[in-house]
Every structure is written in structure tokens, then in C-alpha cells.
Image 1 (cartoon, rainbow over the protein chains, first blue to last red):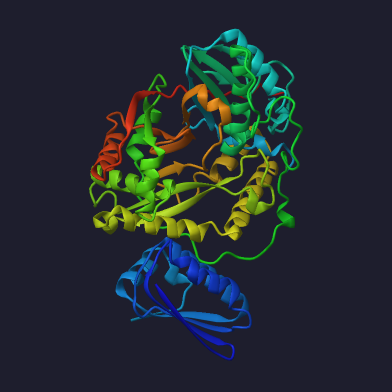
Image 2: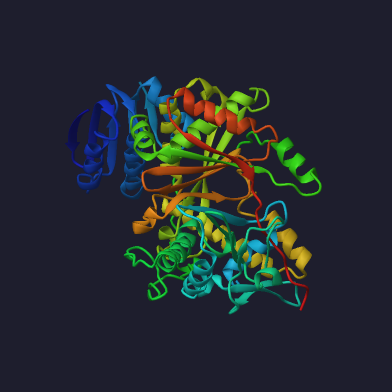
Length: 100
Length: 426
């Protein structure tokens, strides 16, 4: 999994590509824990993200909870497969999602 | 609440849904009755919150008061044990034995699964020492000499809990309920038990399979159960299937060490269309929903709802009206009702006791209910079913075989669950 970050003022875009699973999700988890202070506008760009396990969804849940307290978050360029997962689990009910 | 918080489930209990548990402990040798008797009485003194009898108030209220009589220890009976009666010294627990097996009967309202295991292990700890003349290490065991732990009998105060709402919702859409099996069970007279089946899985193999399929024991078993139900139902009958997975939420409400029964159900909704998906996908869906619903805020909501229901029972007068109120506000029957239930709250540390215990199975009420216990390097599953042809159990085993999960069977038996009897009005 590859992660790129771009920060402009209080806005941040985190681009995630590859596969997010039990091994790789902790890398995004660490960013959520330690690098979102002062961020009020977070975008998770999933262009190139081909797979997410439940560990990935757990991190997305954590990030959304955190951003609910300090600003807003959206998830963009979501593949059809991951969109289906977000839909069947009901995650779409509380995420702001833009399909690919 | 006006009464002991453990008492309220008794309003809902009856002969068909007993809210009792029956733990089957298969020892490595034949049970020595005298040693068991001494060990039981020694260990039970450590758990005064289990030593209760039922008191019926003039307003029909059910309360639990201390009971200092000895616990009943006897050979297994042909008839169902009646907890709360003179047969068992008015206790809501009793112990039976037969050959190499010790049976623990207990009213579930007295404890969560995490809490009861301390009593089981303490009893077995003292039994092994009595029976074999050995001294065991007491790590993780509340022996007769272990002081009360801070918070061991703590109960949450709903007013002191945070008010943050959870994120997301629990889907409450209708799902498949095997209603005919429930109906047939109620109609059977004289009352006959439905069956349970004993299975053993190698922990190493099963966890290896789980990890390679984005799974945990709960999520893999839930996925297998979903598959099993799909096998024996048509899409027109079972358009959607819901799995309920037990969650012990003591820590979420500030009582991580309490013995009290603080459990709620995580609800996993499977549309029938998922039938074509592999186990990994089903497990991903399951675990994701578990993560969503394991937010502590859902625990607080659940506890407040249960507390409100119990307090509401207090406000109703008359035993029958209280029972009707409790049943209509039950945590276990209110939506979303599930198609099946998986109960596994984590690996148990048996210490040196594992050298003296062969197997453990936890028998409870319910249809399509799977209880999971751990011992040494094994999972012990207890699969409970009401269908007289055992079609769900057979389908569950077939689902395991299809994905290469090896298992060992020890047969199917009548549950013989104890039921609780209320005293006559005082």
C-alpha cells in the first residue's frame, strides 16, 4: 500500500493506493492518530486502492469519528468493489463518498 | 432500579426460554463425588453474589436475597433441575455429575460468561486439589482466599455515562426467522428438549484460516452459519439473514471487572445476494459491522435502554403485568431479531487446570445458537438447534468441510436445561 499526503493550511488530502489490509492499514491508522491535529478538512483519495479488508474500514471509521469532532471528511475515487463494501456494511450512511 | 439488577431476567424466563446455562465440563477422570462436594462449598463462598434465592414481593416484584444454604451437588437427574426450589436449596445454581462430567446449572441473569468462568475455574481448582492431593498455581483464578477485586460487583450508573451519540445505525430490516422450528418446540408435549451438538476445532488451524480470510472466530463462524442457512432455505423464504454476535461491554460502561451480565448483541445483516460471495468477503462484511457497532457509544445506548426497561418493570404492579412488560421490552426479542447467534467472548486462561479438563461445552437456550469455549489449543463449539432433523447443524458442518476446516464431533444430546421456579407470593 502506498500513502501520499498533501497538506494546505487546515486541509489535507491522503492518497491511498494498493491494498489496505491487516498488515498495511496500521500505516494509515498512525496518520489518523498523529497527523490530523488542526486539520478541519480531510479528503481520503482512494484512486488506485483496489482492496480493503475490515481493518481498512476500521481506520476509515476512526478517521470519520475524529473529523466529526474537528471538521469534515470525504472519501473520493472509490472503486466499485469498495463502494459495494461500504454500501453493504452501511458505512455509506455516515461517510461522504464520491465514487470513481 | 428497586431490586437487585440480576433479578429482572426472571420476569422473562419460562420453561421454553429459561435464561439458564448449563456448562458441561468433561474431566480427564471419573468425578470423585466427595471431593467435588467439598470443593463446591469451598469455592462458592468466594462468590456471595451468586448465593441468592428468589423473594417475591407483595406487589409481584422479584428480588434476590442472600442464601447461605449449601449449594446442591448431586448425580445427574433424569428430570430437569428446578432452580430456585427446595430441590436445590433455593439457589439459582446447582451442580451435577455423571461419570467423568461435571455439570454447572446457573441462572444467566446472575452473570455474564466472563463472570461465570471465574466460579467454574475456582470450583475445579479446589476440586482438583481435593481429588488428587496436588497444589495448583492460582494464576487467574479466584480461589477461596482471593480478596474481592475492585469493581468486581460494580454496576453502572446510567446518569454518569457520557451522552455522545454513536456514528452510523444498526439496520433493522426484517430477516429470516425459523419460526416453524420455534412453534414446533413450543407445541411439543410433554416438554421435550431440543438438542445440542458438540464440536472440536484445532485453534491453530482455525485461526490460520481466519487470518487468511480477514476473519476472527466470530466472523468466520457467522459467515459459515450464513452459508449453512442459505443451504437449507430457499431465497424466497430467507431473503435476508441476520447474525447476532455477543458483545461483552463491561469496559465500555466503566465496569471492566464486574461479574454482572452486561452483554449486548452486534447485528450483522446479510442480504441473500451475498450467498455467492466467498468466506473472506462475508467475514470482511461481518467484521466491519462488528467494528461499527462496537463503538462504546452503542454500549452506553444499550445499557441505558436495558436500565430503562428494568426501571419500567418496577413501575408496573402485579407479577403477571410485570412479566408482560418485561417480555415486551426484552433486550433479546426486540428488533432487530436475528436468525442465529454466535457467542464467543475470548480465549480463556485455564492455567494448570487444563491438564485435568478434557472438554468444555456451554449449553443455553435458543435455536441456531453457537457457544464457543476455549481450552488448551482447541475451540469447543456447542451448536444448539430446535429443528428435529438437525438440518442446520448438518449444513453448518458441510459449510466447514467445503472450506477445509477440520473438526471433530462428539455427538448430539438433549439440552436438559434447568428452569427457574418462582416462589409462591409472600
